[in-house]
Length: 117
Image 1 (cartoon, helix red, strand yellow):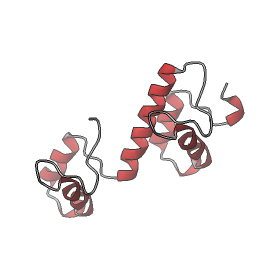
Image 2 (spheres, helix red, strand yellow):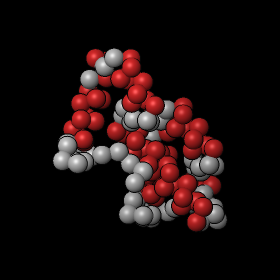
Image 3 (cartoon, one colour):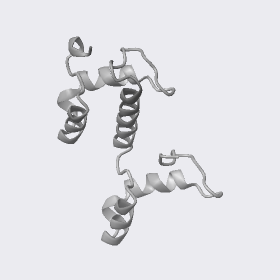
Image 4 (cartoon, one colour):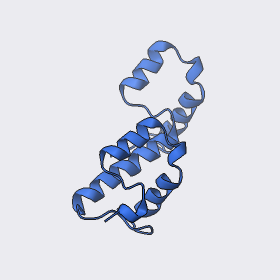
């Protein structure tokens, strides 16, 4: 799967989810080599960013299937409320990073709900 383990998730009887949580908490104490190794595999230092990227990917998939429209406010896609996520991005536009805003702009994200169709 294209995801990282949740906090309590185990893999081969090891609590890999807790290990990931510890790496994030101890980032400043990790050696540059340890940080580089985690960066090299795309380790998500922020769980929030990982979730945001997941939702963006779903939105991109949604748009591939529905080229003529954007999700409505309460629309679900692959068990995610992608419509609500879109509404949240509009509401929180000023809190998004420049990178997040740029990624949404790249896919033609309608910031004004009246321009969705």
